[in-house]
Each structure stands twice: as C-alpha cells, then as structure tokens.
Amino acid sequence: MIRTPDDGTRLRILAWLREPGRAEHGATAEAVADRFGMTRPVALTHLRLLTAVGLLRADGAAGRTYHRCDEVRTAEVARMFEKGW
Image (cartoon, rainbow, N blue to C red):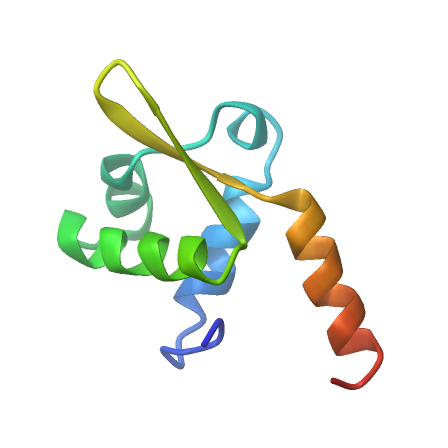
C-alpha cells in the first residue's frame, strides 16, 4: 500500500513530512498538493491512506487539518520490514 502508485509518491510524502520544521508543524493537504504537483483531492487520498495505516497523524488547528508523521508507528513498521515481514 505504501509503495503504490508505482512512482513512489507516498514514500516521497512521508520523507517530506519528516524534514526539519515540517516534522514539527505538519502540512495541510493544500501544501502537499502544491509540493508534489497534484490536486487537493489526490493529496487527500494519499494522506488519508497514510493516516489509515497509522503512519500519519491528523490534527486540526484553526479549521485546518495538519498531517504529521507518527514516528513511533513508522519505526515499528520499519522494524517489521527489517525482520523480513
């Protein structure tokens, strides 16, 4: 699920959300759409999937939803893949 679509968009979104500054504040669907050259609905689809599998957290502030990496869950998933899961 994380690697689909084949172009690696979700992995790039996760990497971008882990960058300094962005990791602390998160990003809106609009920011993700702008950064990756996609429409807001497409960005929302990616963000919702990543949230559903537990790799992102979505928090609301000032009427907007900000998405941040869930570092604990990301580390758990990485360990599973390292063990050959």
